[in-house]
Length: 278
Image (cartoon, rainbow, N blue to C red; front, side, top):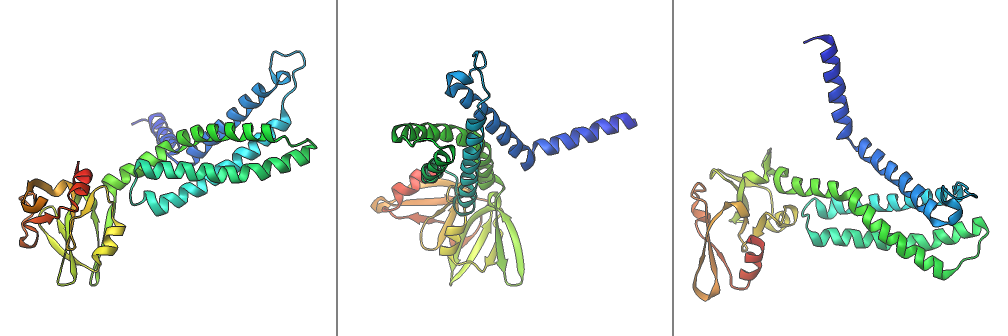
């Protein structure tokens, strides 16, 4: 390989690394912020139209929009990090995403009113509640759209991670093992010890308590079938209706373990289980 080709490959690798980095995502958001502020402020008043004879660059409105957008960005990022740590790390679903958006818009509303009061006082303008309300509604609508566009990739990445690449750290005595979700068939409790069962039937003891484990793992993939067992969706091979409206789960034949040969779902949990499984 020639030196020129090596340089090209190096530049290409650096560029791909930058494209996939957090710095590039933040640069994208800053570019969107600037373009958005320019467009909005140029459409806000006739004098700001580029083809107007009395055109004047809307510097005050532009700077005010930048300040407002920065505050909105900070609020959104802090709230996203909170949801990422507390909710999205465990389960990414539409209800959680909507709660994230709703709570973010709520915080923006709380911030918007006092900030506009301050900006009006600094600019020496009178505060008109009608325009304040209209401005708030427009800000919330635009924020909803921009937040959705800006964080869609992050949320999707978290969803993919929670489904495919997530692991659970299993401590067994002096040993610590990381098990990928996709390699786990189920967890079951016997004689107050929780065991992890892998897809090949291998069993290992853990230091978990089943209730604690249920809170930790992804509930889109794992289900608490009864007091003794948490089962992985992909490990289920067969469902059978049995007496009194109950269900019987049979796991895949490769999972050979007498303790979990048959798993029963009570009639009270049957509907919940089917909604999860389907």
